[in-house]
Amino acid sequence: MAKKSILDHFPKKLIPRDVQKNTLLALQEHWDKADIFVVNLPVASGKSAISVTLASWIKKASIITPSKLLVDQYKDEYGYLHVLRAKADYWCETFNCPLTKRPQQKKLGKTCKKDLGCLGCMQYLRDLRRARVMPYLLSNYYIYLAHRLYRDSLIIDEAHCLTDVLKQMASKKLWHFQYKWPSNIKTTNELKEWINSLPPEAFNRRGKASGETSFGIVQENLIALKNELNSYRPTYLIDITTDDYNGEEYDCIKMVPLDISDHPPIMWPSQVKKIILLSATISRKDIEQIGLSGRKIQYIQADSPINAERRPIIVPQESKSMAMRVQDNNLPDMISYISNVSRYHKEEKGVIHVTYGLAKKLQAAQFPKDVSDRLIFHSKQDKTKRYNEFRDSKEPKILVASGMYEGIDLAYDAGRWQIIAKVPWPNLGNPAIKYMCDKDDAWYTWEALKTIMQGCGRICRTPTDYGATYVYDMTVKRLYESGIKNNLIPDWFKNSIRWEI
Image (cartoon, rainbow, N blue to C red; front, top):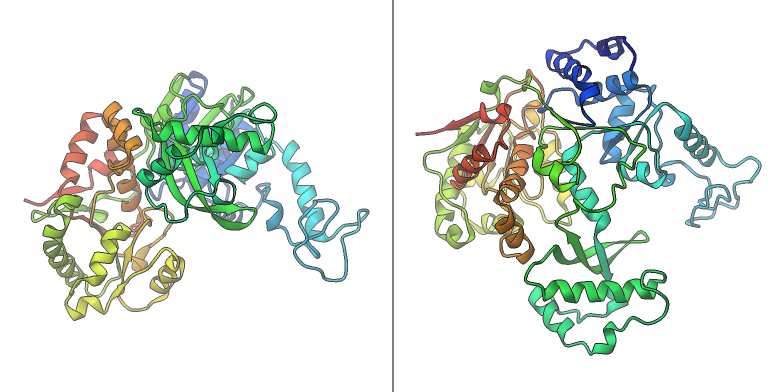
């Protein structure tokens, strides 16, 4: 490693904050002592500048993010980074290019010529060639894997997403058009009844060796599903859902593994010597899940650049449990509390984080008119539309949000307050989750805790911002105690909690 200080590689147009300086110097100090660096960076720490500085200092690294949106944000801020995107993100005249082998989607009376090609396709090929030789580059997780853009070092932004991404990649999908289960099946119990009613010949391994043909994979997946549904030690989450198949949504049964620690290290094969994981919510539990706990690890925890007084997390004295068994009984009290908080913040926009089921109950409830007129509800189908409606509104609207603990940015007046109505505990009604909870209660605690911590970061996005988070569900006290016991709660989160007495 070069003797030059890592801070000399900080982007020239920026002035490093204290949290960025301290984090980078800690990485430099421990660089030769570890293979894995787990860097806990709260909101407003400036992870992108840290990533770019580190890549420049290392000289040979890949920076990857979970989404195209984050890739664009990096590129907008650091235009000199070499970026590789998916084929579909490059403009193409005809979508019938012999160079990039795109599917025919439309005809414009002209095809790309092999000797020239259209500008978009040629740009994609140039970017791909350069991505293989450039010392450091930027892409999303999937492009990095698709082209095996491995370098000596791998820098992973928003690394808390990594576990779910790897689980999705390792999941098995059983498509309805292949397996033809009855369309009225809605639950895993009904699925179990159906699969146990199939004749033995449905599970025969015929044809070539299993996995060598699509037929072999179909048979193998069917056997795996039956074994899982009849197992007393489940290892998969089973979901009857829809998913993308060649660009279209189809019904499928998805089997998502709970434990991927023993799966092949597709993100970091042997040529990747150093792995740097950056996130506001990452812990030793994540490291165990992705199979890195056996390596030499250095944990680096940064302080939040936002004063704790500007981002309080308030647990009210009148909080009640929102567990399913008592939810209906306690719902009137929660509605009253939401109304009181909404009136206190009557001139400010806010968010109420709920499950889809609880959102339906709130939508059917009787709120005072001055509160109900501000509420915006959404379904799974119009989620983005309603979120944009909330963002664009000049009035102090309240978004009743489901599944928005991550990915939304409500800086400054876009969001001054939020209520976490129910602690997002994993569903113990699922046998696989129940098994994992019994096996490791720290895992169960961490799954809920990191979701709440991500949610708390949706408002109050910069050191000069401010915003209050209210946690109504009293089971947060049990979550906090378990988190402290298992050493899972970072100081920046602990310092912001206010227990009302």
